[in-house]
Image (cartoon, rainbow, N blue to C red):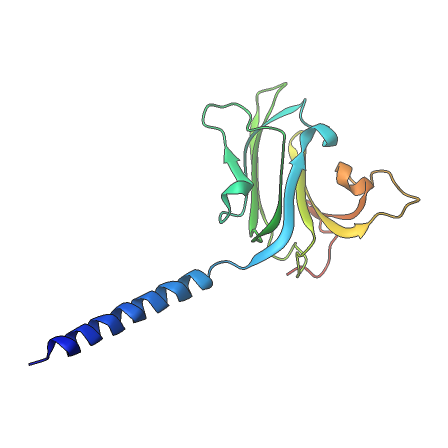
Length: 173
């Protein structure tokens, strides 16, 4: 027969073990890396031609996704910057205003992103039926360039690589 003290001790040890396991589970969540996810259809020139219906950069951070529930656009620009999980995919769904055609693309980002996304940015541009995805590096564009080197307006200011549909950036993660 166990005493009340032994029972209480076992109960507290069990509770402590459950608490420790719970905290360890929280600590083993997705790795947070300081980087940016943004897009700007006005600056990139696609906002007048398409309605963005849905986007998702990964699935672990709600600030990097939106979905239309009524067929209307979810907007043509957004920006999130700071520690967040690096997404394994980018999903974009859009409607071409002139024809009503709805398109979507899901890009597997594994192997396309830099090994270290710290300080980098991910953006996309919609050009009719084609989605383009870019990595913006923290490296400033040469002062003599100061013009777009790619479809995104961000390439005017920073070194940018197209990672979809082509793969300009070599040695991804």
